[in-house]
Image: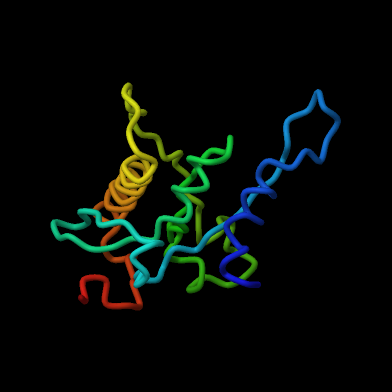
Length: 148
């Protein structure tokens, strides 16, 4: 997909009415934000784990320009014995899905969209940091997050 059309297509998907007018749209868009954003137009500087770095801003921009909620999903290992037990005795799945809605204080004044995108992205970074600090042994980032 052409990157220049991607944002508009995602906005369309999130605002498209697939149900009768009386029903809300049930569209979901998932964005895996595990890359360090290099393009200044698609990133925001945030504070994460006591350091400044850049996070992708796409989910925040979608949150700002569509009526959709933005959620943080983290898959966490909670049954460490699942793979050590015989299949017949493993009663609990190994992973659980941790879901938190990303919320931020909407400004009372007319802030620029860039400021709001930065606030939403920082709220995402703060939630991710909470999960990382609670489960540090499960945090894995495949890229140099603090590289300039």
